[in-house]
Image (tube, rainbow, N blue to C red; front, side):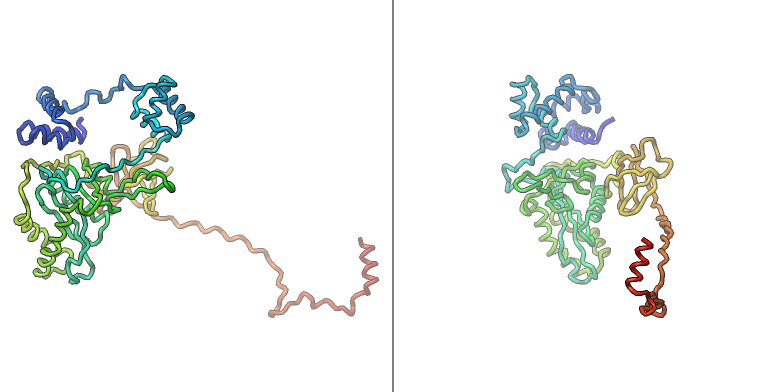
Length: 430
């Protein structure tokens, strides 16, 4: 069965066979050389669509090093070469211990064992100007504009999420209430359903798209950056996410917002728009068609690089808030302070104490992935906590009656025996 990446590669190869793409353009889309494109096209002609499947899938490599060699190499590195880089350590392992491996193999072993932390690559060269992409759907710039779009006519302010194609200037935009992950995923779903999956999105480094890496300590390297919900969704969709290093790098969408803050604001004012629903209706039915007539340009290549969603991609599952949770012994999972029950028909052996994928979808429902299935879960009603019987309070003597102490009322000093007699009585008793 073909994976999604293999289906995407096959689509480009079919475009090359039909003459819609040149081999050089197909190589740029696939990220491979023109020579390898010719070889893949030849294989597809001979063997059909199965030619894109790697011949070694499911087979063990004959050149793979044994487990003992890996363990010994990691042990020697920790004992003798702890401050060496993988490149230098490979030379010493080969010369001193006759362990011959590549530097990337050793690097992978050390990362798995926790003996080496990968470092972020620095940008060596920044390109100030670049040409447009040749095909529609190769690169789509994505950003949010916070502006007084309705000029105070609405009780709550609105924001604009825009996606503009780098090759054609085709604009897709929606007004939203807040600049949140949920709103962005709603807009992303609408875009995917109408256009398909582009090859890449170009965004800034906002917290919605990129989790800021943290430093371990003073002077140390940055830790590996985490993945946001939007980043995870794009990865599962097979869409590359590119982060701009400056506002000038995503100048196409920035200039687009400048035009929109002039033309769109005036159009909304002329139409008397005062609500979010009316603004989106005007945007879809009136403004975007006018934008296409005025600013859209023909791409250098007429081939559309958007890929279909396909049956293997479930948008409702991918475009949701996803986290990992541990299953309790009663087959429940905790989500936002509430307990959710996994249905009995989805229970399978080994599910207790297992880590599962929990999804809160855009419609608010909660689903759990059990094995290969994703099932909805129901919220458990909170049981009232049993009230423990209060501990008995020790009975204390009340020496007060009417607010006055009475413990000395029976004592009379005049009727007491003399001190010498009291001492004699005490000595006899003792």
